[in-house]
Amino acid sequence: MDNYLKFATFQSPEWIPVGLSILPAAWLKWGGALENIVLAHPQIFPDYRKGDFRNMKLSGLYTRGKKTDEWGCVWDSVAEGYDSICIGHPVKTREDIHALRIPEVDAGLPHGFMFLRLTYLRGYEECMIDFAEEPPELDILIGKVLEYNIRQVRIRLASMKRKEYLISFGDDLGMQTMLPTGPLKWRKYLKPCFAGLYGLCKQAGKLVYMHSDGCIYEIIPDLRDCGVDIVNPQFRANGLDNLTAACRGEGRYKIAVNLDLDRQMFPFASPAEIEEHIMLCVQALGSREGGLALSAECAADVPLDNVEAICCGLEKARMFFSKRSYGFGVEAKEKHD
Image 1: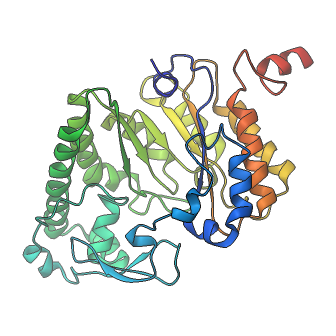
Image 2 (image 1 turned 90 degrees about the horizontal axis):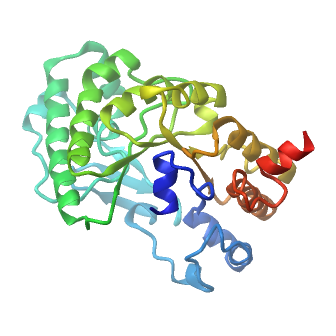
Protein backbone atom coordinates (compact mmCIF):
# COMPACT_ATOMS: atom_id res chain seq x y z
CA MET A 1 0.00 0.00 0.00
CA ASP A 2 1.47 3.36 -0.99
CA ASN A 3 1.86 6.23 1.44
CA TYR A 4 -0.93 8.37 -0.04
CA LEU A 5 -3.43 5.55 0.25
CA LYS A 6 -2.39 5.05 3.86
CA PHE A 7 -3.01 8.76 4.49
CA ALA A 8 -6.43 8.62 2.84
CA THR A 9 -7.56 5.56 4.79
CA PHE A 10 -6.04 6.38 8.20
CA GLN A 11 -3.55 3.51 8.07
CA SER A 12 -0.47 5.19 9.56
CA PRO A 13 1.41 6.73 6.63
CA GLU A 14 5.17 7.06 6.95
CA TRP A 15 4.96 10.79 6.26
CA ILE A 16 2.38 13.52 5.80
CA PRO A 17 1.79 14.11 2.08
CA VAL A 18 2.67 17.71 1.24
CA GLY A 19 2.65 19.78 -1.91
CA LEU A 20 3.16 23.29 -3.23
CA SER A 21 1.39 24.49 -6.35
CA ILE A 22 3.08 27.39 -8.13
CA LEU A 23 0.73 29.29 -10.41
CA PRO A 24 1.88 30.13 -13.94
CA ALA A 25 2.00 33.88 -13.22
CA ALA A 26 4.60 33.24 -10.51
CA TRP A 27 6.82 31.34 -12.94
CA LEU A 28 6.46 34.12 -15.50
CA LYS A 29 7.47 36.70 -12.88
CA TRP A 30 10.33 34.95 -11.06
CA GLY A 31 11.68 32.46 -13.59
CA GLY A 32 15.11 31.05 -12.73
CA ALA A 33 15.16 32.50 -9.21
CA LEU A 34 12.03 30.53 -8.39
CA GLU A 35 13.49 27.45 -10.06
CA ASN A 36 16.49 27.57 -7.74
CA ILE A 37 14.15 27.24 -4.76
CA VAL A 38 12.23 24.40 -6.37
CA LEU A 39 15.40 22.46 -7.18
CA ALA A 40 16.57 22.84 -3.57
CA HIS A 41 13.47 21.01 -2.29
CA PRO A 42 13.14 17.69 -4.13
CA GLN A 43 10.88 16.28 -1.40
CA ILE A 44 8.30 18.91 -2.33
CA PHE A 45 8.93 18.78 -6.10
CA PRO A 46 10.13 15.23 -6.83
CA ASP A 47 9.23 15.35 -10.53
CA TYR A 48 10.64 18.77 -11.38
CA ARG A 49 13.71 18.90 -13.62
CA LYS A 50 15.95 21.88 -14.33
CA GLY A 51 14.54 23.97 -17.16
CA ASP A 52 11.00 22.62 -16.92
CA PHE A 53 9.54 26.07 -16.39
CA ARG A 54 10.90 27.21 -19.74
CA ASN A 55 8.78 24.54 -21.42
CA MET A 56 5.64 25.43 -19.47
CA LYS A 57 2.53 25.35 -21.63
CA LEU A 58 -0.38 27.41 -20.39
CA SER A 59 -3.78 25.73 -20.38
CA GLY A 60 -6.56 27.56 -22.19
CA LEU A 61 -7.97 29.37 -19.17
CA TYR A 62 -4.52 30.74 -18.25
CA THR A 63 -4.00 32.41 -21.62
CA ARG A 64 -4.86 36.05 -22.23
CA GLY A 65 -8.08 36.82 -24.07
CA LYS A 66 -11.57 35.44 -24.47
CA LYS A 67 -12.55 31.85 -25.06
CA THR A 68 -15.84 29.91 -25.15
CA ASP A 69 -16.38 26.51 -23.51
CA GLU A 70 -18.53 23.54 -24.47
CA TRP A 71 -21.61 25.01 -22.73
CA GLY A 72 -21.31 28.36 -24.50
CA CYS A 73 -19.95 30.20 -21.45
CA VAL A 74 -17.45 32.94 -22.31
CA TRP A 75 -14.22 33.26 -20.33
CA ASP A 76 -11.64 36.04 -20.21
CA SER A 77 -8.19 36.60 -18.70
CA VAL A 78 -6.53 40.01 -18.74
CA ALA A 79 -2.97 38.68 -18.54
CA GLU A 80 -0.94 35.59 -19.39
CA GLY A 81 -0.57 33.18 -16.49
CA TYR A 82 -3.69 34.31 -14.64
CA ASP A 83 -6.86 32.25 -14.49
CA SER A 84 -9.88 33.35 -16.50
CA ILE A 85 -13.25 34.40 -15.13
CA CYS A 86 -16.62 33.68 -16.67
CA ILE A 87 -18.00 36.87 -18.23
CA GLY A 88 -20.59 35.52 -20.67
CA HIS A 89 -23.63 33.59 -19.44
CA PRO A 90 -25.67 31.94 -22.21
CA VAL A 91 -28.79 31.13 -20.17
CA LYS A 92 -30.02 34.65 -19.53
CA THR A 93 -33.66 33.88 -18.70
CA ARG A 94 -35.56 31.01 -17.16
CA GLU A 95 -37.19 30.43 -20.53
CA ASP A 96 -33.71 29.84 -21.96
CA ILE A 97 -33.26 26.91 -19.57
CA HIS A 98 -35.84 24.91 -21.51
CA ALA A 99 -33.95 25.44 -24.77
CA LEU A 100 -30.49 24.70 -23.31
CA ARG A 101 -28.93 21.69 -25.00
CA ILE A 102 -26.57 19.36 -23.17
CA PRO A 103 -23.18 19.49 -24.94
CA GLU A 104 -22.28 16.59 -27.19
CA VAL A 105 -18.58 17.30 -26.64
CA ASP A 106 -17.08 15.30 -23.79
CA ALA A 107 -14.87 17.86 -22.06
CA GLY A 108 -14.40 15.99 -18.80
CA LEU A 109 -14.86 17.33 -15.30
CA PRO A 110 -13.27 20.78 -15.10
CA HIS A 111 -13.15 22.77 -11.90
CA GLY A 112 -16.65 24.05 -11.20
CA PHE A 113 -18.39 21.11 -12.86
CA MET A 114 -21.66 21.13 -10.84
CA PHE A 115 -22.61 24.09 -8.62
CA LEU A 116 -20.37 26.66 -10.29
CA ARG A 117 -21.56 25.49 -13.71
CA LEU A 118 -25.05 26.67 -12.73
CA THR A 119 -23.64 30.12 -11.98
CA TYR A 120 -21.61 30.16 -15.20
CA LEU A 121 -24.71 29.39 -17.22
CA ARG A 122 -27.12 31.77 -15.49
CA GLY A 123 -24.81 34.39 -14.03
CA TYR A 124 -24.23 34.48 -10.28
CA GLU A 125 -27.04 36.87 -9.33
CA GLU A 126 -29.67 35.15 -11.47
CA CYS A 127 -28.59 31.78 -10.12
CA MET A 128 -28.96 32.99 -6.54
CA ILE A 129 -32.44 34.31 -7.34
CA ASP A 130 -33.29 30.89 -8.75
CA PHE A 131 -32.21 29.22 -5.51
CA ALA A 132 -34.18 31.78 -3.50
CA GLU A 133 -37.41 31.49 -5.49
CA GLU A 134 -37.09 27.78 -6.40
CA PRO A 135 -38.85 27.82 -9.78
CA PRO A 136 -39.29 24.51 -11.64
CA GLU A 137 -36.62 25.68 -14.09
CA LEU A 138 -34.00 25.31 -11.36
CA ASP A 139 -34.63 21.56 -11.24
CA ILE A 140 -34.49 21.41 -15.03
CA LEU A 141 -31.16 23.23 -15.18
CA ILE A 142 -29.65 21.09 -12.43
CA GLY A 143 -30.90 17.98 -14.20
CA LYS A 144 -29.22 18.92 -17.47
CA VAL A 145 -25.89 19.69 -15.83
CA LEU A 146 -26.10 16.49 -13.79
CA GLU A 147 -26.88 14.39 -16.86
CA TYR A 148 -23.78 15.73 -18.60
CA ASN A 149 -21.62 15.12 -15.53
CA ILE A 150 -22.85 11.55 -15.12
CA ARG A 151 -21.70 10.90 -18.68
CA GLN A 152 -18.29 12.43 -17.93
CA VAL A 153 -17.85 10.39 -14.75
CA ARG A 154 -18.66 7.16 -16.58
CA ILE A 155 -16.15 8.02 -19.31
CA ARG A 156 -13.50 8.83 -16.72
CA LEU A 157 -14.09 5.61 -14.80
CA ALA A 158 -13.96 3.54 -17.97
CA SER A 159 -10.56 5.04 -18.82
CA MET A 160 -8.99 4.41 -15.39
CA LYS A 161 -6.56 1.57 -14.90
CA ARG A 162 -7.29 -0.96 -12.19
CA LYS A 163 -4.39 0.26 -10.05
CA GLU A 164 -5.70 3.84 -10.13
CA TYR A 165 -7.67 4.19 -6.93
CA LEU A 166 -8.46 7.92 -6.76
CA ILE A 167 -10.71 10.19 -8.81
CA SER A 168 -10.61 13.93 -8.16
CA PHE A 169 -13.28 16.62 -8.39
CA GLY A 170 -13.25 20.37 -7.82
CA ASP A 171 -16.20 22.70 -7.29
CA ASP A 172 -16.16 25.82 -5.10
CA LEU A 173 -19.22 25.43 -2.90
CA GLY A 174 -18.60 28.23 -0.39
CA MET A 175 -18.08 31.95 -0.12
CA GLN A 176 -15.68 33.58 2.33
CA THR A 177 -17.96 33.23 5.37
CA MET A 178 -20.92 31.05 4.36
CA LEU A 179 -22.54 28.81 1.77
CA PRO A 180 -24.15 30.92 -0.98
CA THR A 181 -27.26 28.72 -1.01
CA GLY A 182 -27.29 28.04 2.72
CA PRO A 183 -26.94 24.47 3.99
CA LEU A 184 -30.63 23.54 3.73
CA LYS A 185 -30.99 24.33 0.04
CA TRP A 186 -27.58 22.84 -0.68
CA ARG A 187 -28.82 19.59 0.85
CA LYS A 188 -32.09 19.79 -1.07
CA TYR A 189 -30.73 20.56 -4.53
CA LEU A 190 -27.02 19.75 -4.69
CA LYS A 191 -26.35 16.94 -2.23
CA PRO A 192 -28.34 14.44 -4.34
CA CYS A 193 -26.24 15.42 -7.38
CA PHE A 194 -22.93 14.81 -5.65
CA ALA A 195 -24.25 11.61 -4.06
CA GLY A 196 -25.21 10.27 -7.47
CA LEU A 197 -21.93 11.20 -9.13
CA TYR A 198 -19.72 9.98 -6.33
CA GLY A 199 -21.86 6.88 -5.91
CA LEU A 200 -20.75 5.81 -9.38
CA CYS A 201 -17.14 6.13 -8.25
CA LYS A 202 -17.73 4.13 -5.09
CA GLN A 203 -19.46 1.39 -7.09
CA ALA A 204 -16.30 1.20 -9.20
CA GLY A 205 -14.17 0.83 -6.07
CA LYS A 206 -12.53 4.26 -6.29
CA LEU A 207 -11.72 6.78 -3.60
CA VAL A 208 -13.17 10.26 -4.12
CA TYR A 209 -11.17 13.47 -3.65
CA MET A 210 -13.18 16.70 -3.44
CA HIS A 211 -11.73 20.21 -3.61
CA SER A 212 -13.79 23.21 -2.62
CA ASP A 213 -12.84 26.78 -1.92
CA GLY A 214 -14.90 28.81 0.50
CA CYS A 215 -16.67 28.22 3.79
CA ILE A 216 -17.96 24.64 3.63
CA TYR A 217 -17.44 23.20 7.11
CA GLU A 218 -21.21 22.92 7.67
CA ILE A 219 -21.54 20.40 4.85
CA ILE A 220 -18.32 18.42 5.16
CA PRO A 221 -20.22 15.59 6.91
CA ASP A 222 -22.71 15.71 4.03
CA LEU A 223 -19.86 15.37 1.54
CA ARG A 224 -18.77 12.32 3.52
CA ASP A 225 -22.31 10.98 3.14
CA CYS A 226 -22.00 11.53 -0.62
CA GLY A 227 -18.90 9.34 -0.78
CA VAL A 228 -16.04 11.82 -0.42
CA ASP A 229 -12.96 10.18 1.13
CA ILE A 230 -10.61 13.19 1.02
CA VAL A 231 -11.80 16.76 1.32
CA ASN A 232 -9.61 19.73 0.30
CA PRO A 233 -10.92 22.78 2.21
CA GLN A 234 -9.36 26.20 2.75
CA PHE A 235 -7.89 27.12 6.13
CA ARG A 236 -8.86 30.80 6.05
CA ALA A 237 -12.49 30.47 4.94
CA ASN A 238 -13.36 27.68 7.38
CA GLY A 239 -11.19 28.20 10.45
CA LEU A 240 -9.16 25.51 12.14
CA ASP A 241 -11.60 24.89 14.99
CA ASN A 242 -14.51 24.39 12.60
CA LEU A 243 -12.50 22.01 10.44
CA THR A 244 -11.40 20.02 13.46
CA ALA A 245 -15.01 19.64 14.60
CA ALA A 246 -16.21 18.67 11.11
CA CYS A 247 -13.40 16.26 10.22
CA ARG A 248 -12.04 14.72 13.41
CA GLY A 249 -14.99 13.06 15.07
CA GLU A 250 -16.42 9.62 14.45
CA GLY A 251 -18.42 8.18 11.56
CA ARG A 252 -19.50 10.89 9.14
CA TYR A 253 -17.46 13.39 11.17
CA LYS A 254 -14.18 11.62 10.34
CA ILE A 255 -12.69 12.28 6.93
CA ALA A 256 -9.21 12.64 5.46
CA VAL A 257 -8.21 16.26 4.88
CA ASN A 258 -5.81 17.74 2.36
CA LEU A 259 -5.69 21.17 3.97
CA ASP A 260 -5.29 24.21 1.73
CA LEU A 261 -3.00 26.37 3.85
CA ASP A 262 -3.62 30.08 4.37
CA ARG A 263 -2.67 31.46 0.97
CA GLN A 264 -3.95 34.92 1.98
CA MET A 265 -1.14 35.24 4.52
CA PHE A 266 1.67 34.09 2.23
CA PRO A 267 2.31 37.46 0.53
CA PHE A 268 2.52 39.35 3.83
CA ALA A 269 3.68 37.02 6.62
CA SER A 270 7.21 36.60 7.89
CA PRO A 271 8.93 33.24 7.32
CA ALA A 272 8.59 32.50 11.05
CA GLU A 273 4.85 33.17 10.93
CA ILE A 274 4.49 30.83 7.98
CA GLU A 275 6.27 28.00 9.79
CA GLU A 276 4.17 28.60 12.90
CA HIS A 277 0.98 28.46 10.81
CA ILE A 278 1.95 25.14 9.21
CA MET A 279 2.85 23.54 12.54
CA LEU A 280 -0.40 24.74 14.12
CA CYS A 281 -2.37 22.98 11.40
CA VAL A 282 -0.41 19.74 11.85
CA GLN A 283 -0.96 19.74 15.60
CA ALA A 284 -4.70 20.40 15.23
CA LEU A 285 -5.59 17.98 12.43
CA GLY A 286 -2.72 15.49 12.29
CA SER A 287 -2.15 12.18 14.04
CA ARG A 288 -0.01 9.08 13.69
CA GLU A 289 -2.89 7.22 12.06
CA GLY A 290 -2.97 9.66 9.15
CA GLY A 291 -5.82 11.56 7.56
CA LEU A 292 -3.88 14.81 7.02
CA ALA A 293 -2.11 16.16 3.96
CA LEU A 294 -0.98 19.75 3.41
CA SER A 295 -1.21 21.84 0.26
CA ALA A 296 0.02 25.36 -0.41
CA GLU A 297 -0.42 27.62 -3.41
CA CYS A 298 1.77 30.53 -4.46
CA ALA A 299 0.75 33.24 -6.87
CA ALA A 300 2.98 35.98 -8.26
CA ASP A 301 2.46 38.14 -5.15
CA VAL A 302 4.31 35.75 -2.81
CA PRO A 303 7.93 36.89 -2.19
CA LEU A 304 10.66 34.36 -2.91
CA ASP A 305 11.73 34.33 0.75
CA ASN A 306 8.22 33.21 1.65
CA VAL A 307 8.20 30.54 -1.04
CA GLU A 308 11.37 29.20 0.58
CA ALA A 309 9.74 29.39 4.02
CA ILE A 310 6.72 27.44 2.80
CA CYS A 311 8.97 24.72 1.40
CA CYS A 312 10.96 24.49 4.63
CA GLY A 313 7.81 24.42 6.72
CA LEU A 314 6.27 21.68 4.61
CA GLU A 315 9.43 19.58 4.86
CA LYS A 316 9.38 19.85 8.63
CA ALA A 317 5.67 19.09 8.80
CA ARG A 318 6.06 16.14 6.45
CA MET A 319 7.95 14.10 9.04
CA PHE A 320 6.14 15.38 12.13
CA PHE A 321 4.73 11.98 13.10
CA SER A 322 7.54 9.89 11.63
CA LYS A 323 10.11 7.94 13.61
CA ARG A 324 12.63 9.56 11.27
CA SER A 325 11.60 13.05 12.37
CA TYR A 326 14.57 15.39 12.62
CA GLY A 327 13.77 17.54 15.60
CA PHE A 328 10.37 18.97 14.74
CA GLY A 329 8.06 16.00 15.24
CA VAL A 330 6.19 14.41 18.10
CA GLU A 331 9.27 12.62 19.41
CA ALA A 332 11.10 15.91 19.81
CA LYS A 333 8.02 17.52 21.32
CA GLU A 334 7.52 14.70 23.83
CA LYS A 335 11.20 14.78 24.79
CA HIS A 336 11.04 18.54 25.27
CA ASP A 337 7.87 18.24 27.38
